[in-house]
Structures are given as C-alpha cells and as structure tokens.
Amino acid sequence: MKKNPTYVADVLATALAPAIWGSTYFVTTSFLPHGYPLTVALLRALPAGLLLLAIVRKLPFGIWWCRAFVLGALNFSFFWAMLFVSAYRLPGGVAATVGAVQPLIVIVLSRVVLGRPIRALAVAAGCVGMAGVALLVLTPTAALDPVGVAAGLAGAVSMAFGTVLTRRWTPPVSSLTFTAWQLTAGGLLLVPVALVAEPSLPVPTIANLLGMAYLGLIGAAATYLLWFRGLARIEPSAAASLGFLSPLVATLLGWLALGQSLAPAQLCGFAMVLASVWLSQRTMMPVRPTRPDASPEPANRPA
Image (cartoon, rainbow, N blue to C red):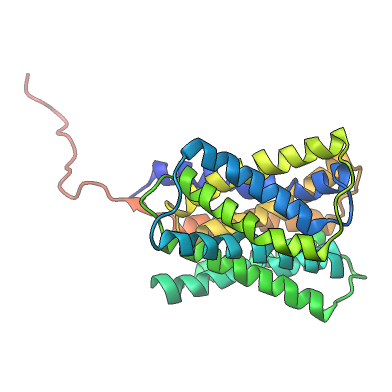
C-alpha cells in the first residue's frame, strides 16, 4: 500500500486556509477600527462574495438557493457572530481553546451525517490538539464567562455542521462558484444584524482599507476557495484538524511582529498541535493499493 500523493497535495493546499486565518487577529487589531466586529465580518464576506459572483456569473438554482444560505449562515454569519461574542466576553486564550473542540464535533457529525467510522486515533489526535492549543494560548489567570463559553461552543458547532454539510452537499459547480454563493449569502445575512447592532463605521483610513482588502481578498475569497475545494476532496475530520494551525500561526505572528515572548509551555503546545495535525492526517489518509498481481522481475532475463 502506498500513500496517495494527490491527497497529500490536497491536504497541503487546504492547510493554507487556516494558516492564513491565523493572521486575522493581527490584521484586525493593527489595521481596522475597533468596536465593529459584525460590520467588519459583513465587509469581509459580502464584497468578496460579490466579486467572485461577478467572475463566475452563475447564480444558485433550485434547492441550491436554500442550501447556499444555510451554509452561508453556518460557515459565516452565525459562526462569525458567535466567534465575536466569544472573543469579546472571554480572554483570547479561552476563546481559542473553546473553539478547538470543533474537530471532535466534526468527527461525531461525520458519523451521524456521512456514516464515517469514528477512529480512536482521530479522537486522540483531536484531544491532543485541543490540549496543545490550551498550552499555546491559555494563561493561568484566564477567567470563564458562561455566555462567552456558550457562544464559543455554539460557533464551533456551527462551523462543524458547515464543514460536514459542505462535504455532503457538493453542488454540480466549481469550487469558485460554490465559494461565491456561500460568501454572498453569509454576507447578506449579516447586513441587517450589523445595521441594527452596531453604529456606522467612521471614515476609513488607508490602513483600514488595506486591512479590509486583505481580509476580503486573501482572508475570505482565496482561503475559503481553498477550504471548500479541500472539503470536496478530503475527509471533513481531517480538514477540521487543520484548524489547529490558526492559533499556532497567530501565536507565531504575535512573537515575530508584536514582540511577544514564548514560554516553555507554549513551545510544548506548538509541538502538540503539530503532532495532532500530523496524526489526524495520517489516520485519515487513503492509501493507494499496489497491484496484487505484480511480481518481481526475474534476476536474469534472456537476451
């Protein structure tokens, strides 16, 4: 049995998405105005979705109108809303640790929705990854807020359902078109919430515009194209485990760009996260069978 090189390439391409998402905190705090999380989420999703729609020029059809809005809500609107509530009410480390339960939820949902078997090694890898994230970002003085914890768990469940249903509801269109539908639907659902819940944005600065352009073009359009393409090709639980790369990259950026220090516990967390991702991919990776009728070449071949 041999490893499938195509699957490995798909995993590496999909891993770019959560790795880039790890830069969201740095870009948001360094380039965007503070206090407008839902408006920022709206501006991150909707312009990117409309841009992709202008490129593909294909609207949903039939049942895909409903499915696009369901997936847009799960993967963007509700997920981002709960993420921001959790981030505002909990220290960053606690919010990241609560959200790290998502791969375990995906394993259970994959069994219920897709009929995938639950592998003990995959569960173990998810637990190791969650512990690694806790070591990476959790501080001893972190406080727990029940509403924040509930929002973090709700966001993890939402993204987990979105991950599994994206695999189940693979439409007969390209990944680019599928991404355009979901981003646009998610952005449209955020419009009334942002208008009611938040004041108007101030006049944007050059830094604000650059930050929004990065989050929209790179952090949404490009990365979710890779993410949804990956979900069509690799197991949902394998894709979900790649989400552990986000807090890892965020911590690295804090160290490199913001001068934050790395404690020995964080270095241990780095190692645990990487081990978890490797073990998850190893567990879910399909193998390519060798030909059963293949026989070794004879040692001496007649001339």
